[in-house]
Image (tube, rainbow, N blue to C red; front, side):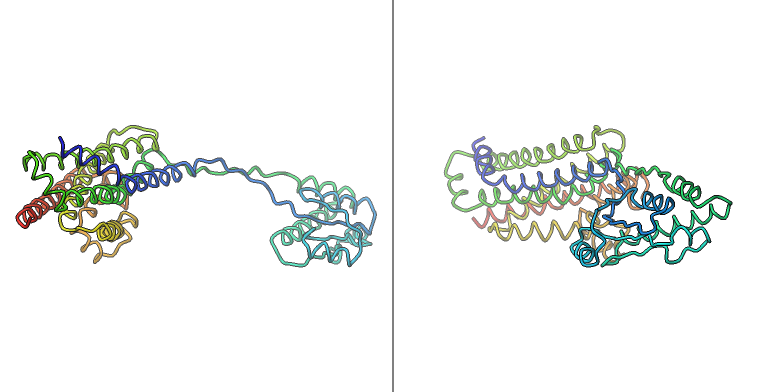
Length: 380
């Protein structure tokens, strides 16, 4: 137990990377899963306008009333210099003048030169205002042709065009199964990185000659030393894995049942693989900086090649062939089948085959770690 206590003492000083990887991953997945459920609302645009009526008839007043609806109306003197300043500094977006003779021309069916518009920049608000003017005058003209007076036609057009269309959003909320699938899809990268970045430095320190010599001078047997290291690694990896699993239930809002149990088993196997790689690498590397490089290269590289970040269906056949030599490929392949991702369907036989291959990788990795540790002891 003395070796185990030493392991935990050293581990306390190297927990920060694991905490950062775990915390950032959980925050990102939680934000993605909740962002789609936020309520959306639609608010129509309200351009800032200045409106002038030079015709001063009942029909022109009805036109001004219609134009004013849904817009912010600013009272500015009808002076070219003042209007240009207001438009330039975007106090208003658009200035509309109902020209003299508006009623007479529209009553005769003429729709040209009814308004004078002024603006500085072409934009959506101006285009919308132009569209509303054209729509209004054409509608009034249509009612006049039906036999209504211009005043009646103006009221009818305003009433017809003032009908509101109810706008609603189709909420793209993610189901618990989709959240669970996304959670387990990205888990291999962060699980591997969290384990190796914290467990690796601890094992490197415990493998240093001065630490070994001090341990061997005591009454601790080699078997007890090995047991203490293995126990410490198991406790640490198990704790990291458990935290991820608990976070998964909280984020998805559901427990692990049905197909999700296969995903849990898949993550257990990959956690063992991550621990094995940590033991193997720490027996070969004596520098923390080199270890960090391995974490980034192997963690990110295998994630991109094996389909963690990019779905396997989008990867080329050559890339997938090369990725088969990495355990992450079989993890992702099993996960795709479990949650029917990347054009896959649930296939128990394929899932178990992937599990078997992953276990084979774990056996090979631990065998390599055992041989490496044995060789390092002989050198010592």
